[in-house]
Amino acid sequence: AHNIEQNAREVLQNLFGHADFKDSLQKSAILSAIKGEEDIFVSMPTGAGKSLCYQLPAVMHPGITLVVSPLLALIHDQIKRLRSLGVAVETMNSKQEAGERRRVVDDLCGERPPETKLLYITPELCATENFRQVAQALRVKGRLAYLAVDEAHCVSQWGHDFRPDYLKLGYLRQKIGKAVPLIALTATATKQVMDDIRTCLKWRQPGKIFKQSCFRKNLFYDVMFIDLLDNPYEDLRKFIMKALGPSEKGCGIVYCRTRDACEEVATRLLAKGLTAKAYHAGLKGNMRTVVQDDWMEGRVKVIVATISFGMGVDQSCVRFVAHWTLPQSMAGYYQESGRAGRDGNPAYCRIYHSREERNIIWFLIRKTNGSKKFSLSGKWKAAKSNFEGMVGYCEKPRCRHEAIADYFGDGKPPCEKTCDFCKLPRETANRTERFQSGACG
Ligand code: ADP
Ligand code: MG
Ligand code: ZN
Image 1: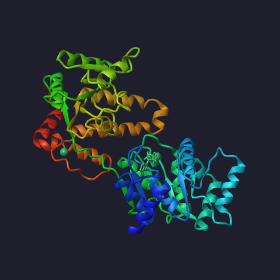
Image 2: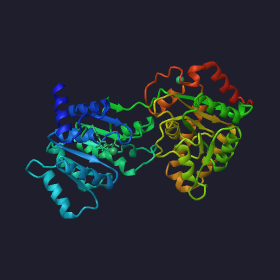
Image 3: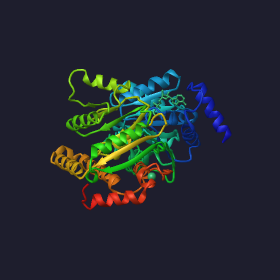
Image 4: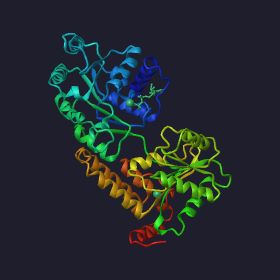
């Protein structure tokens, strides 16, 4: 094992030019792939360095690695990078000239040992008879090292980027045999998506999963029921003051579903003495930039925004994220609330849940089911189930961190009273019960 690690490190430094592995997860995924005994599932956020988890084992293995990637642009990117390192990499795709294709196939299937180390292919191509013959030939000659499937969530209807052609990869896997280890990679692995990946790609049990845990121990999660509050805006003010602390350092975000709600909440908070501004697509001219800068630079403590706000916003001292209305999915909620506490200091994430908003969103989701395209695409089922998950998060008295971990297929996280349920289980259960029985504040 020591030898494997040393060899891998040499390739990492001398060929890829990296001083070290990015982290222990990348390292263990790579070492496990090099051993080649098991199927491997890698789930890490974008930019974490997933490509190396198949590229490094691929160059160390005497055989050829097939890499399935959904977009030609991504494929060309990777080919450029690998060729600049001197790695023999080729592609087969539908946009290729016949002569070029011939050259690639000759190298792959010829008498002499192939030069090619990695072969990038699109999922459409995998399904063609032409490519199946190539795959079959490679198998017979024992030339295959790995089957790598990048953006593997594309096999799942539950993912955000379903591609029907990915379903055909199961057939390819069958064709080349399970002895060739699978390396599946994605940044978005919910439990449902992982299940689909296992089924569709004919996962060999038990396999190895390398997954960054979703647990963030510095975030305190809770749920308040608007119907049970005498004065919801006052509750929001207190929540904000507590999160900012006595020094009132840092800032926060209140998310609302509609522009009107943003304006209303911002006005109410302003009247209570907080510096708050609304941010949404209805703002005129450069007002959105002005509001965002005011918030980024600390002149405004609270930005009251629709979910259009936050993508690519790099602010580490966000002390709270409140959802004035229910998010539409756990994935969205995790992402939005996750903007809090990036500096590692304590931060607070709260949902203000109400029967009225819940019913409105149900109504909106049902209405979209009327559109034929939407319902046929399976998107409606996904939207419905996503929202059910979100309602369940609010209306089931249980550890919030555990509910999030369940959604992402993680094990039980060590919450240690960083959620309302673990801190005050009886009170939280009572509150939930009163909400469900239709009580009012
Ligand atoms: P992902 O597919 O997970 O989004 P990539 O594989 O595209 O991420 O890698 C993101 C960036 O990280 C690339 O620029 C890559 O060169 C770099 N990278 C990967 N591994 C390492 C490492 N061990 N040390 C330094 N940089 C790395
Ligand atoms: Mg990638
Ligand atoms: Zn908990």
